[in-house]
Length: 410
Image 1 (cartoon, rainbow, N blue to C red):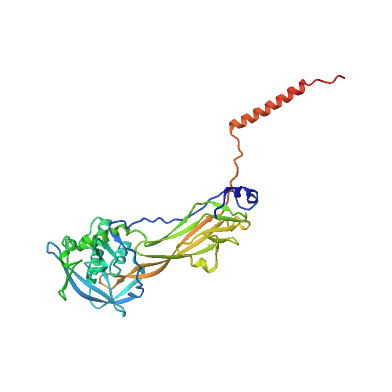
Image 2: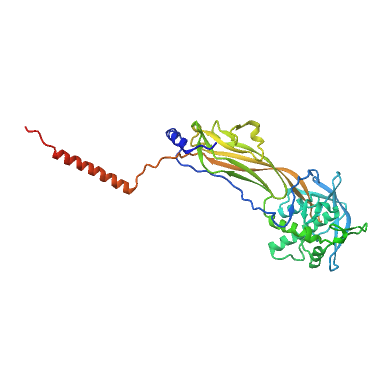
């Protein structure tokens, strides 16, 4: 697919007669993405569940069983299992303000259309209950009883919000809604069992005899990873070009870009489903050419698979000063886990996770100005002096020869 330099030179006179200027530049918009998740956990890949109807615009808040945990120093830490019900069954709900009031049988309403803006929080919600697929050594969170998964998620949420405020402000005052006392933090970190106050059931990680620490096994790494990604966008697009060269096809009719690929990056679990290409300010006859050499057109441009790579071809005789910059809109489709904040007047904010399908758009602008490879015909100073000297020498020889030639007698 890529064209060689010989072809460029052979087309030189044709290109020079076109309306395109003889400078070449290209603009490509890239989105940097910092990698993460190389921190401790072994996190298995998983297909995210469809939970689009989780909460809707509002739900009735119901408190379930109460749990008490006991750390090694005997400090008690209480947690209430919280459920939301929008008519389709109970859904786990997580508190975001540890010290705020909660009441039973209260209607919570979605906070406008504002999705969760804290990506660290979203990371915890997306990678724990009810989407638990976290492995640490011999223990997998999804193998634990639901109350254990819920406890790990809620404890990680509170500790993460506490540590976020500590990092941003240098302290977490006792008046803060994210405040956890030293005793409460010690209780969370020392927990090896959870007791259901209603049924008297005791829950562990693994067998009862193991006495595995909840914080060390799951909570610590959830919080650590969440702190790493809290300022990283949940989903993004990276547009790659093999290089910025513009070449000429073998038949001399088209300018062609180098190979272009579109990568979708998802922070908190999910999938990049593919993308759509929309040409703007495109000269007549512009083509999208797949890596296999076949043209991609029509409906196929709206359903480009995530691994499709392509070239762009533009007719040489259709380019003018008004359209030599080709504008392309890349609309990438994602399926990700996101969530909304839910609020009730005078009570604390709660949240849950839901699956959403969303689109991100990025521009790709390509300058189609083409500069062919021109042979270097310039001479160095030494070569110039030699050439001038040679001319003078030849002229001198000519003069001497002319003067030395015998004249005919008259």
